Length: 316
Image (tube, rainbow, N blue to C red):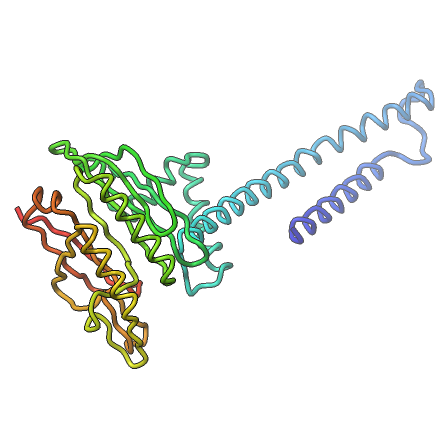
C-alpha cells in the first residue's frame, strides 16, 4: 500500500508539472495573434487549448493504475493460494514473503499464457502435480493449524466417486471400482493424540464398518497408535499401554485386518533419528480381502515428510 501511495503521489506531481507546462504555453500579457478576437473569446480559446494539452494525461495515469490493479490482483491470488495451502497443512522453511514471491512469478507466467480467470486450469495443474495423471478427482478436509489436513486423490478412469464427507480425524469417500462396478468405501484417517478423541474416532469408524458391512472397506492413514511395544523405539519413549489396548480392541471388534508391512519396520521417524514408530497402516475388511486376496503393503523411502509413504499392491 505504501508503494502504491508513493506512485499515486508521483503521478500527481507529474500531473501538476504537465499543468504548469500547459499554462506556460499560453501567451501571458501579450497581444492575441488574431486582433478581431475579443478578450472573452481569447480566454475561451486558451481554456480549449489547455484541455487539449491535458487530454493525454488521464490516459497515461489510467495506464499506470491499470498496471498496479493487475499487480494487486496477482498478489491477492497468491495470498489466497498460500492460505489454502496453510489450511491443508503445508509447511515450508522459506519465509512467507519468499513463498509469495515465487508464487507471484508462477501466477504471472500463467496469466501471460491466457489462464487469467481459468480456475479449472489451476485445479488441473495442482492435480497433475500431485497425481501425475490428467484424469483425476479429489476430496479433502482442511487442517487445523499445521495438522489435521486430509487429501484423497484418485484416477477417475479407475475409481468413480459417488459421495464424500468428513468429520474430525477422518475423510470418507464412497464410490465404485470402474472395471467391475464394485462399491468401495475409503476412509482416510489422521488420528489425534488425545486418548479421549481417539476413543471417539475408533467408535465412529466401527459404526461406519457396521453400516457398510456389505461393501469393501479400506481404512488408511496415520493412526497415531501402536499395537505392540516393539512398534516404537527411542531414547525417551514412554509406551502407553492403555492406548495400545484401546487400539487393539478397536481392530479386533471392527473385524478389520491389519495388513503386514513389507520393506521396513517403522513408518515415522523423528528428525534426529532418536525415535521411531509404526503409526501408519492400512486396514481392510474381509469383503475387500476376498475381492483382492493377493494384497501386498510396501513401505517406501522417506523424503520431505517425517512419515514414510505406503503403497498397496494387488498382485495379479
